[in-house]
View: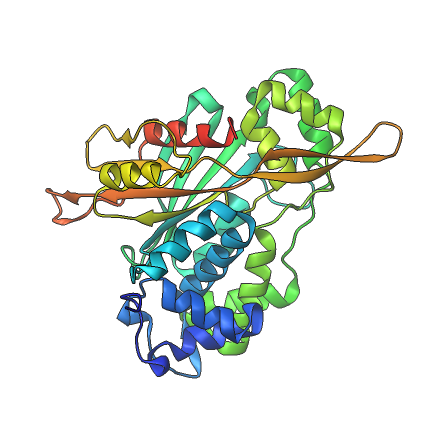
Length: 343
């Protein structure tokens, strides 16, 4: 049985036209067949809505995460075999609030190009145990079906002086991946809420480049210093602004978690439950990745470090609004962050 998201090919032509030049025709078809796609994102016009560009961006980021996280790729493959579409709830990334060279500091580096795609900040989540703050970016046209972004930023000025100095050396030479062509296209879609397919492709290429490491490989000594004071900062030192995780929305995260544990997946021990009880989350522990480090003598070495991971969430209806509770929870987020600490 095919995934529930499969629709007539022409219904998703605009999304295919946006994705194919970037990920290839075969992978574009595969990911659109894998994810549950809102019919409102269908159609085959010569212009793309901002929601379609946003969905195409998320689809490309989803593919990138599967390329980097073998455990996530295994899970998604098994869901496809069962004929179950993936309901992509949100993706997460980590940023540095501090000295970042040519790159805007913190969440502003992403809000600047996600806002023209219809995103706005609809939730602020202090994460004091991590010296961080999280923000929920919601796509306002289709908030329940276009994935959110959970963007966290590490407050470098609140770390110990040795960690601040190490962070300045690591992140201070960051570059800005967005250039004139990308901003012309972003300004166009920001004015009109849609754009040509060509401009959409330009936006996607620039946005995808933003989800990467914008600074040189860190010096091992600086990495170790930062790791001592902030494991999250050390993660950003090696992974940059890559998709930290992608999240599937499931009907019962507790039951799903038990099924995955029985199948041998390395999940975190307990499900995180929000204070209001309506949002429940768990995750597979982060896969390890080999990353380069610069040495004091001018040489280079490589070490295994925690990479990205895959998450699961259940959202209940908010009785006050009658709509899906799209909020996050500071306690849940703090608990989920731990899966990149023990990888």
